[in-house]
Length: 628
Image (cartoon, rainbow, N blue to C red; front, side, top):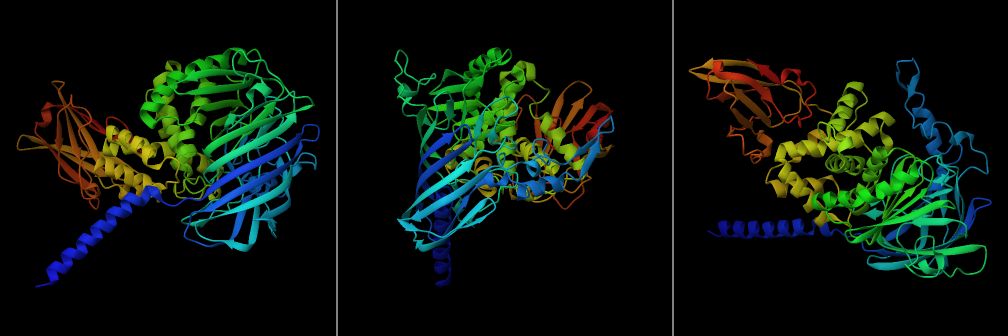
């Protein structure tokens, strides 16, 4: 018969196609940009004029009939979408503190401040002219988005050149970027230029600037900033004219020869990044620290606190990097800048803006968090609007581990305990929404923050419980090497972890990312049968999990009983070889109860405990322990 032969041939073809599909996943096409920008800053008016040449390479199979740019600073105007949304969320009273004061659901840095801005305080980015390949283009400004219907489309696998002239006014510091922040930094220049929106396999992403974070096209930046020569500039990238600039950039022993005039032009280049930030202040002190393979730069305004804390921070970075490199992968650039500025902490490629007047413990924790963003969104460029938890949650997880292992004074009982507590608070508050919610579409700031930061970190720590921490840690490094300088999504990450662990994890994604179902297991009962103990476990809530069940005998001996969950189609390895482990049959996810047979009489047992490592996000641990 020919049927079996045809079937085998077809099967072989499908297997080969599937293999090629898997191999190509991390090679998805990506658009590419090359920015050349020149800006001339007037520090008296807080305005600047700019010229931008953008080479845009369409690596997609699609013909593009329009393009979109972000005009972020238009958000800082009365009645903007950011303003309206902030005031709307502020109507919600989350709770009252012990003094009876209302805690409203708005960002305390924003509140209703935008609605009160005067014309000389607002931010704006105005397009003066725009050409594509030398031809003038029509365009529409829709709040923080510039829509450009193209006179001639961009064909697949071709490059178009856009020439733009624009002008901008720096807003007062409200959120991420602005002038005159709370610590006296003159300019925190984030989101300062018209930025091409990302186009990927899902189409265009012209996300209005409401509150949350970003998604950018990979490319190269060449930026010249002309500003009053009294100002020190810190930025993404590498300064190309250090010996004309000085201010700590010059080569050792070199005499700085600044050109005549009232302004200096700072020339930076940054390869293979998806954004560019800079900051400027006449009082910046600039120090450097050599780290393994790169130079860390530190820019801060010196006062009685910072004169001690910032040099101390610089000395702590090499030890932190040893841990980071081993667990999350190497830093690939030749420099990184920690810059005092902004309104809290905000990450950008090769640099971060952080508030800098706090004590060393807080400063170090903040610096560690923002630096880890270089991995989680800086290099592993997820769409932060769609996957904020893969940005903030993964970063929080890594920050907690870095601080725990490098700073004894901040060591907690568990590096992730704060994240678990945050997640439990979120669930009990009633404000929880699925992690899959678009970052700007959460119904509350409170729900967004605890979801993205806390639940996102719990996702990774709990993943270590499911597949074993060693497999999870290997998977994080594999994720780094397979997806750096690309745009991974949740499916890409889960697939990496499936490959590394050999376990099926789609169920975990569906339950913990796409739903708000919770975990609660308990010990229902324990009884003796024919000289053995039967421990009946009960799944009280609706999310199924594998179970670690530790039995401690009255003689002090411990045995781990492991119950895999049916949807995993496998078992995690033993994580602690010092304790014997018994692997039981699968617990079908449809079943509420499961009986574990222990080869010991009930009278010989001192304690029975579910999840002794406390990595399972069990909402009620009071029923997880039974003492005999």
